[in-house]
Length: 407
Image (cartoon, rainbow, N blue to C red; front, side):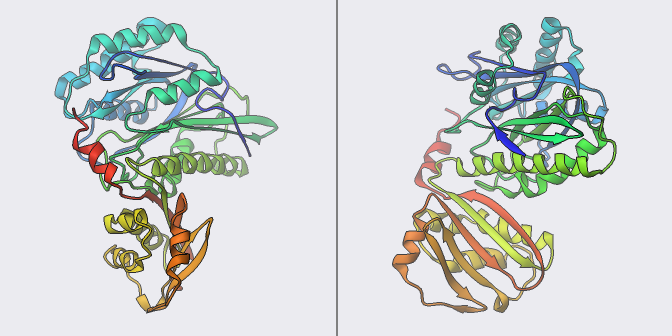
């Protein structure tokens, strides 16, 4: 597998466009469009929040119907959540605008929104944006990058990646983009992420691969403990690479799933590091746990604790906060088996050894925790399973950003 330049337009047959539609923002692009002229096999995962945005429900119908997908239109600024019938009408109007401009059935067009909950989308601006973007679709790397920037809200950087790998003598490309900075605490879903690939693969296998991969990528990040109403991951596979269709769990399927895992993990970590107000990436790695579920539960509890996040921000080696989070996580373990370390590019330091605190050099701990990425490494000594979760520190800016987000 090779990492290459680009994102959603890297794979053969995919184009993208973006525009400033004036949905909410007045000084930036706020709509993006990813499109394949050839119909795509599609799969997706969605928020587990009972309160689901209209766009989530629209996309679920497409993914679960078994019908193909041609593209997805995304807007930022307004989430189209808690908007009643008017919200569904906005989804339909957007998709029908694509049908009118590009001639593909409206029920093959997904829609996604991100932004403020409870505000209605201006349908006239959505339709005008679709008409604009349908004329400017481009398969260039720049077009994909511009699309990744148009879907940002409080994100400070755009997030995209592309990789190539070989299957059956054919070069396969998988690219993606995502956004997410706040209201990040997914559960069997993600924030907004869109993946494109030119592989040919059975729909059921594609869905299974995505559902499995999110468990150890997007589902292992948290910024603030809030699971969004809009979380959506969509993947489109148009088969343009010409490989023989993957119908079974062969070595080719494993190769694809490995690439998918790499892309999703990369994007997930980018989102965690770019959490609202964040100054550093906060990672928790739990090894030698009794079960995979325990490892996931423990690592997510560590990065999800506000006290842990505050300690990371303050570069305070207060290991008790991390042990406390593990203790209320719901996983059963013996604290007298646990070893805990702080790690970063600046070094590694053990601070807790099987039930006993260790006298450590505070200056050394401070140096380790001042790095841009800090890891709490926990050895449970109770099994063979492991998991890693990602989050960010809790800074003063998080409150500032969210105190006036709507206005």
